[in-house]
Length: 213
Image 1 (cartoon, rainbow, N blue to C red):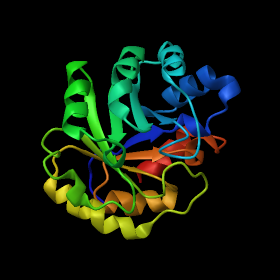
Image 2 (tube, one colour):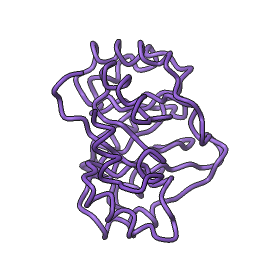
Image 3 (cartoon, one colour):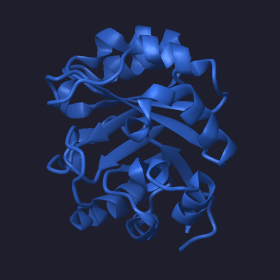
């Protein structure tokens, strides 16, 4: 384990949507660094979740960084909407994008940080030519769009390799618990996305502290 500050980004997908504003305020008070917002379109992944209107509404509740993860087809066409809604980071899947460099440029043109994500079965070579253009790479440690999956430990070598080649944030999302967080951090993760590992606990502050290691 290193002495670096590990950033915790609770995923509001696991929050109580009937109390979403309160939930976001609660993780802010509990010491979360970012708010992770999963956007699913029912095409790239099977589920459908929130859109720009919800991002805009929740933006009024906190000054935390909004880390928006677009699990959608043709993400470039929605960049402006999510940027205008209050996103700080906009991350898209390389598998879902015909023009990754153009999408990155569009994100940057809106003054936002750009991230690119890869599914477990996608090789790091898919990011060739992109690593010097993005601020963050998100490595999925479960298949996107399916809740309740187990952490894929065989993704750790991918994170280790990425850390050697990339100077930006390495984010890990999927199956993060207090125990698997340690493995991800050891492999080189800088940012941990956590769902029920935070929102499923009685004390959000203790949960967040525990994930940092």
